[in-house]
Image 1 (cartoon, rainbow, N blue to C red):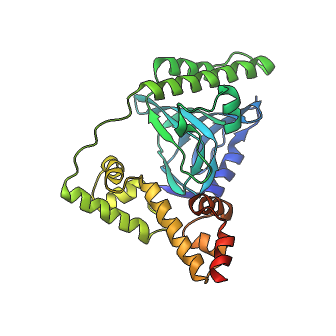
Image 2 (cartoon, helix red, strand yellow):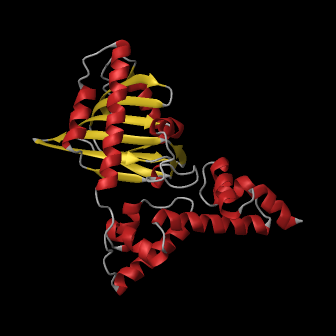
Amino acid sequence: MPITLSQTDYANWLDEATATEGDERADPTVLGQRQQRYVALREGIDLCIEDRWLKSDLEIKHCDREHPLEFTFEQVQTGGKRSQHYDFFGSGLAPAELWRVPGNRRIVSINVHIEPHIFQQWSGETCDDLPDLLRPADQRYFERSGTPTAAMQMAVQAILHCPFQGLTQRLYLESKVWELMALLIEDLKTTPNSFSPPTLKPDDVERIHYASKLLCRQITQPPSLMELARAVGINDHKLKVGFRQVFGTTVFGYLHEHRMERSRQLLEAGDLSVTAAAEAVGFASRGHFAAAFRRKYGVNPGVYARERRA
């Protein structure tokens, strides 16, 4: 059975296991062992190097949160096998979800967070050729996973085995962070990501409509993509592609639109406050809800409610 932690409990465990720069230490707990080291590069750029082994699978409950740009490279060793992969996220809204971290294997990783304004300063442009990387705080972030290229693997190894200290170390590591960002962007631009979507069978369309109904029923605590796919008997890839074909939007986009419409109805009825309406449709943050409502309807939710009650 996996161990389930809240985001706060997981953060507390991280704090207990975290070492200051230059002071790595293992922290054996009931969860497993972890070495984690943060390297201060400069304001707006965070680098974390981690080596962990969990005794069992771990599930972490995350709430809605505003997210910077992020990329993670992991080297996974289980038994005698090794594998590598990366995850790349743009800025925007990270939705409430359940993260699963596999246990009984060693994972060595580097994780980088970059604030959007720092990325814009570095790029020197508005990123019009990569519009998905920078999204507003009320729109789900861009995400992509893949297998590192040889050049990416070399940069990751350079970070893991940096031979320098002090200022030289920070300059060297930041140069490698930007090198990885450049390689990720180049991979994003050159790797074909578009394809002709498969033709959906009538049974597939019926399952996708059923999935939309499940989302609407569980608006405050929606299932993850994998949970939703299992519930309707379809694989997650076909569910994602099929949602775009049937509804013209993503699974999360569909849920977001339903949340917005339901919140508008609640405010128009006049029975709930703005905070209560936000909670009723699954927003953990009133600020995120207000921004999303304003973007959708062009008016603050409080103003909208007062105008309907007048």
